[in-house]
Length: 107
Image 1 (cartoon, helix red, strand yellow):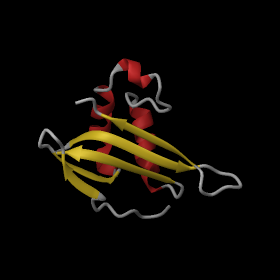
Image 2 (cartoon, helix red, strand yellow):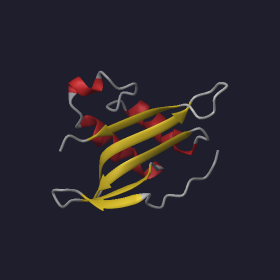
Image 3 (cartoon, helix red, strand yellow):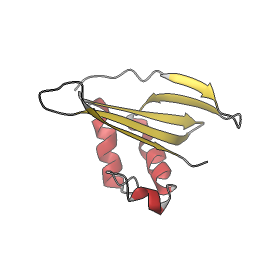
Image 4 (tube, helix red, strand yellow):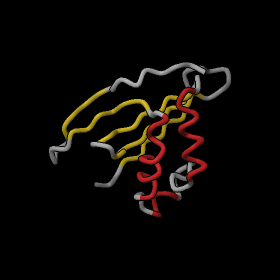
């Protein structure tokens, strides 16, 4: 496993004046990521590969935060996660091909 820096990747202010910090997903995000998933609309969940309402899946995502071929970030307002992104490099002959996931709160 590779240690990741937990420093913010970016910070900005949304149109509604909420301050957002984008940073790597960390072990401390377990409860907030589960709360984020619980707030997602049921119709949206059917299109996601990972079940963001399942605590075991959230644990798997949190544990994968140090995986060599997987980068995960969260957008945070205060203590609440309002966005999740992941880029997972695919195995094979081409090392520049990846799956990308971006899930954001509707509010």
